[in-house]
Amino acid sequence: MVEVASPVHNFALHRDILWNIFMLNADMDASTSPDLPYSSARGTRQFVFSTLTVLRCSSQVCQLWRSIILEAPSLWSRVIDLDILQISTLRWREAVMERTGKAPLHVKGRVSKSGDQSLFVWIISRFGARIRNLDVAGVPNAQSLTSAISFLQNPAPCLESFKLQFDSFMPLGDPNLPPFANNAPFLRSYFHTGIDFSIETPWLSNLCNLYLCSHIGLSGLLEILSRTPRLEFLKVERGVLDDSGSAVPLRHVILASLKEINIYDHILMSILLLDNIIPAAGCRLCLRTPDHSGSEARMIMKSDTLTMMEGVFCRYIQYYFASSAPRHLSLEIGRDAVVISARVHPTQNGVSPDFVLSASCEGGFWQDFLQALLSPFLSCELKRVTHLDLVVAHRLLGRCDTNIRKLLISLTNVHRLHTTASTLEILSEYNRPVFPSLHTISFRYFIPGSPKAVYGFLSSRKKFGASTIHTLDFTRSNAPELYFLSFLRHLPDMEILPKGRDIREDEPVSEDCDMNL
Image (cartoon, rainbow, N blue to C red; front, side):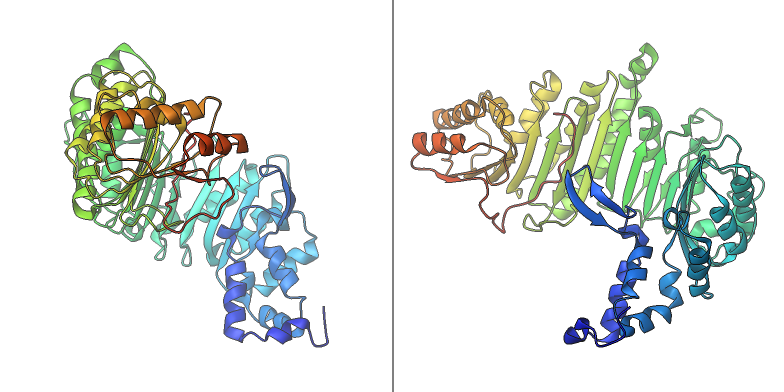
């Protein structure tokens, strides 16, 4: 530690500013990687420190910083990182917990089947009543499992976020008893995975985030949702059981605050659930349906489900476009997945879209699924869309191809297109021009044969008398230099923006999705 005047005093920050910086650095949700000196994903050397390590190092910079940090239990209580403390000395573990004082704890990490789980047991047993945020995953041993069950059975007066992902065949709850002895008044986020509990619990009405990942009947799920009027985020994953044929009719649930729905379940259950939920206007929807071909399922897909599916998508799509009139639309259609996003202002780079619909169907129903998804767009008002991100998988034939053509032809005011050369090749085969107001094309990536596709698209537009393309923008593509030289030679009257040029402010950023197009 530096006892004398530190160089940081030359930049004397106010104590309040320093405090805010320390609090930001102590956010474990923003630090997902513990002390890893090398990131193989990027292939570059980069140091990513845990929040606990950052806090300890910050306390050794100078006397001022040390006094601020050591006098703040609320800083130390936010960095109870199991991954780091498990490899630390017992003395350091006890020192960290002592520095937390009586402040509410944020506990995060994993428990390993082959590792020492005594730290988790010690913290959850001794300090359970002080835990504010719990985010722990892994394979528990008998002692950890017993401690977790005990934690669930006791009041949690400070608990705000609960996420316990244990790979265990033993249920962690009792269907006749509510978790936390009905005493979790501040609980706002609940990750439910294999925990049986009574839906009579009063803290359900306070939840803002709910993740359900265990087998539960559809009617039971809707009953739970009816008790969560403040819900803002809902995730359901592979667990809804079909009890729609029971004598009790399914109830409709109004969730006026629900901003995002994320579902990974079979088609019928997903659509039935969405059909009985009325969320907030412009609610984000991510739907993945891992269905497989089968005569019974195919018969279902050919009948009432398709009609219901179109009705559900109409509600999410048409209401948003009618109320928001977005100018930036992103449409990515793959062989078994589609991602649609939109935002009102096309220049808001780095800002999440106002509307997102991501859907996939892994079985043999993709044509029917995509047909039901695209149909609502044909009656939407799309004339205000000026910026379009477009990727279409090669040769989507049948009724879907017809709907895609109709949709693209309706986008009459698009003047900036961000796309791929293979998509341009598909567009050049249409018997009428698309995007009559188009003047700029920017590219994502190039593959062999791309220049031919670009020339073909430009030639088809000229044949139909469509608007002239003024700019080809390669600043975001991987095109080699020889492509630029070729375009410069063959298109002398066109502005060619090469790779490496600074990106313009009015250029929208696509919400890319890896769909193996």
